[in-house]
Image (cartoon, rainbow, N blue to C red; front, side, top):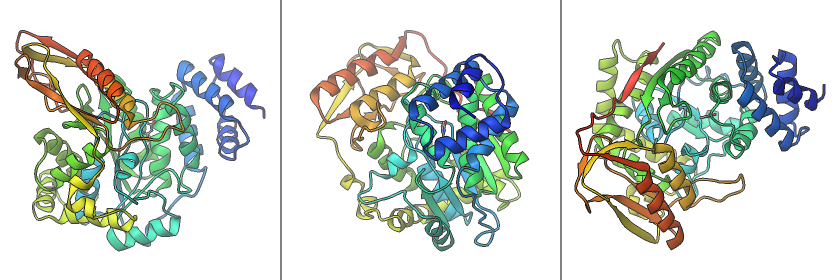
Length: 434
Ligand code: URA
């Protein structure tokens, strides 16, 4: 086969065969196809789309591109969760230790930032020394020892996704239903989860803006998971405003630590409680979802979830003194307020613009090789429907350079739309796909 024929076929809106998809995934993973041709194929898929059969074939080929874990000798039921990507989405940092503290083993493979959305691995690397690199024996051992392991795309699980994810991030080819489904589900299948809770975002800060598109994404991922014998459900959640207050790596870690200690924004806790409750319930720990949520609250209130997070940091080489004292996490040299430009009610927040403002401050990557600055980002405590007076503190910018700070201020202010009339707050969730 020749890659150019496959690119041209998709460019001309034709359906790719399972053999062509498998060949592309294997050859690209092996380094036999250059990035520019893989990027051309990603763009052709992005524009022309894939049907359901092609999407399933791509997912399975990517899941087979490396090892496929069977963890049943360690735990009878391993749970995993994954978000389709959002701004300020630090739910994994809270949900994973919470679920593990409820006695549900969690083995997760997470990503780095993608486009305007942040990534769990980048956030965790705010801890000095913490590493997502686990060999497969280490992954298994840590799961057996502390019931919680978080790896990046470095381990030999779905390596095709590791390469394609980084390529899509910088080639404008993220927001495609088939590519997102294949990326997420290939990782989940390869990492050996028995239960998968998907947090599929809908809104102007999500890759799928319309709830119908998010629902379709959820449906296809749930079907792929269930067809592969994994109990899979998806929650459709709102992403028309950042989740919680903090956007940016270390700032989000601090907020997650607050949530694990019983503080932080109530909306963040509501989200974490729902997702983790679903994880615990799916794992069969409780008869009802309400009982699962109670267990989750207990695990937070008695400090076990926070202790589990501490173990996760320690087990993967991180500096636990930064868990004990979050003020030791990276701090930006410049911290300045953003003031409300007028009195009024927040009518709309362009959430992707907030995500990009944070990326340009240095919290994410504009090209594959960019180093990120864990300290920088934004604090935006107000939501759609909140009323502010002119000159009131709308938020804070944490920056490492005055020019970037000025640019972020402009971008953040432009992302807010104001109204003189009351505006309804946004719903948290739009539904569940089972
Ligand atoms: N999360 C992933 O892991 N992959 C995507 O493509 C989008 C979000």
